[in-house]
Structure formats: C-alpha cells, structure tokens
Length: 220
Image (cartoon, rainbow, N blue to C red):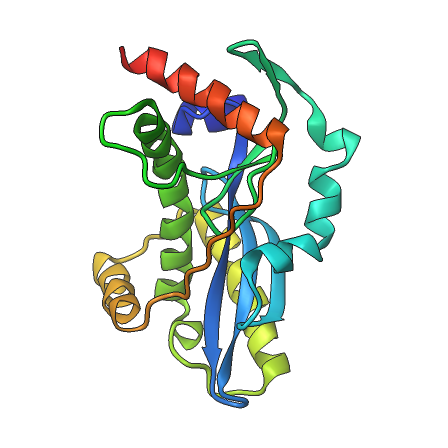
C-alpha cells in the first residue's frame, strides 16, 4: 500500500475497481469483466461472465470480492485522516455504492470546490485502470471487437488475455502507441454503457468527506 500511495498519492488506496463490457456475436450481447487493477497495471481480481444487462453494482454485490472487502482481514492497516479511521480503499466510479471501502467521485462538483479537488485526485489513479484495459485490448485484438465465438470461449479468452496482460506488464513488454490509438478509435465508436447509483452508507460518506478535506488542505 505505501508503494501504491507513492505512485497515486491517494491514501489507503490499493487499486481501482470497474466493470467493462465485451461484445459477443453468438449470442449477440455483451458480458462483463469486473476487475481490480493496481498502480503497476496487473489485474488483482477478475470476475468474468455476467450478462451485459447487469448493473456493475449488482455484479459486485453477488461476488466473492464483496465478502472479502467487508471482512475483518481487509480492514487493516487503518489510517487516521482528518480524525476519521480509514481502512483499505478501492477507487470506483458512479456505478458503485458509496461505502467505507468503495470510494467514488462527488456528482456535479463545482469547479474549484473541495469536492472537485477530491474528484481530480480520485480520477488520476483511476486512469491507470483505463490504461490497463486499453493495454489488454491493444495486445489482444480478439477481445477488443465483437468476439465471434461461443459464450464459454469468450469468457476463457478474456481470462487468458488478462493473465497474459499481467505477464506482459511484469516483463515490461512494450505497447505500441498505434495499438493504443486503435483501441481509442474503436472505443469512440462503441462506448461502454454507463450506470449510476445513489446508494451510500453514512460511514462511506464520512470517509469521502475526510479525504476531501485532506486533499483540500494539500491544495492550499
């Protein structure tokens, strides 16, 4: 975790959590990859295969991951920030509930506000997640476009590509800029579905408020 902080500047963060949709031709729909990625780009957790019609929060709610992050083992080490006890954190987007271990941006934060500064500091490490998904699609083009295979084979292809991605990153394999640009061009044509949830807990809101105050003071 100290290594993650040195790279991202976000206290107690251990990685970014998000869901990504991968299209399939047979049957013609998408499946979801729910994943955690850390600051060095490897996948730390994979959940592959939920139907694309599912909300990311529902996929998370039914996953083994939810039980793990709510367990006592996940709670340490704890840091006290602005008078609030903060355990390990996963950085998320608006699709996930606001909880002590799942932090997401403030909605409609005014420019220059404490909330906007928090959002900026949250977005920086989350870009690592987006880059990692871009790298895996850039390296393994079969999963970038609509996969012409059966559902089971599509799941296996996504798992295999994610595992190979970890190996490539461990050996610092180069990703050509043109490959990444190809992914950006494709994503511009076929945007990922977006979901929002207002679900939150009081403790989760307190953790976010404490970190917003922390980043606000750093910016002064």
